[in-house]
Image 1 (cartoon, rainbow, N blue to C red):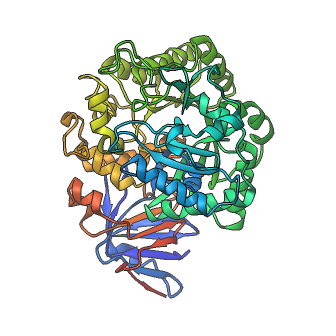
Image 2: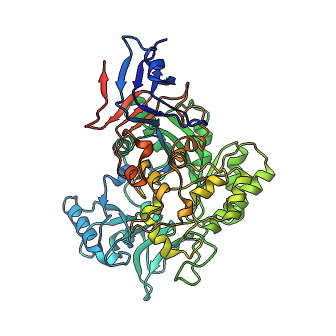
Image 3: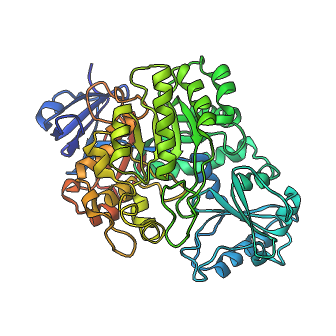
Length: 536
């Protein structure tokens, strides 16, 4: 059978186990039919075959983001952007949105970081005095929020309120400041207006457009159920998939509180290559920036502060064992070394009690590690899912928060590879931008925003960095047989980059733009000035 599509005169980087590079690739029925030289592939075509002259451009397997939050990102694009350089500027943006809103509408923002504010402090409820709307603004990390007095009152949060596994921040006088950490922000979230199906579709549509522009063809959704519940969110994704308005493929992690019911009702349904049932998703600690990640040593300059664990060993063991016994994968958020060790203790106990082959349980982030931790991960077959671009964006903050060697061991990607852990690359978008090119560049350079190099020994080669966002990410979802490399029979999901990409420096990769993104051989993004000529 003749191919439907041939891409020729390019650099086709297969990312297979031999690192083969070819000139051309043929596609039939959404699958890769052949790879080879121009001469070999062009002779396979017919008058009905669509020909794309790549003019030397680089073809890679479609990028896979192994940890992001598509609903969160999409909704953030509808919210007030609070990634400002000052609290004053942020408050001004909130006021502008309030002026354009109906009385009593919630004003929702996202993305602030006190590290970037000229005031060098967290915003508080008093900053929003005079704005007669309930306000809820999420910190960039998504583990902390600031709200105003009106929002606190609606949620029933008082000066004497307490919450398990969370922090209601108070000043020296015992007054709530409006800063809510971990479970505390959930007290407000549960009284906020719910989202309609149409709003959720609009959010996913916006995120989808950004992702394909970044060359992303598959994502791992790190927690279905954040906004409404896992069932409603899945129904939205399923409808969009059937309508043809969802381009990217999604591997769906299910939040712990929804997991049992979701598995009972949906696990037996007919899944497909667009939407795939993924693991149980749990959280064991917070973040480094918020000093809520569970670390072994005190945070730098904060005697006695070691973050928080959200579960005891027994509590976590019960949840993990339940999923493990059902032959399900488990993905657990763990940033601090103390949290990572807890997760490994639980994985080890559960595997001992209920032996299984090839679990591929995951540790999302795996931020602060050491050689003992890495050896345990290798022994247990645990997959780390780091976010390399955080070294660039937040690396200076890590150096201020952690002592050496802990600071140098954040996202130790070279160690992950040396221990053969096959790390899966991700962004944690919307925490940071979704661009895999930014992650690849950061993995290669380890440069922070201030141009400091954090642990240069952890730098990766281009191929090592690419593997994180292709074959390793595919393996992290048990999908290496259908994606992650450009080999015959696999899905024709491809990311097309500029000519000469394999020789680009880390800085050039950071500055590069995706030329075209294809899913099953169909163009889902085409850069306006793309030089490729499509001949019918």
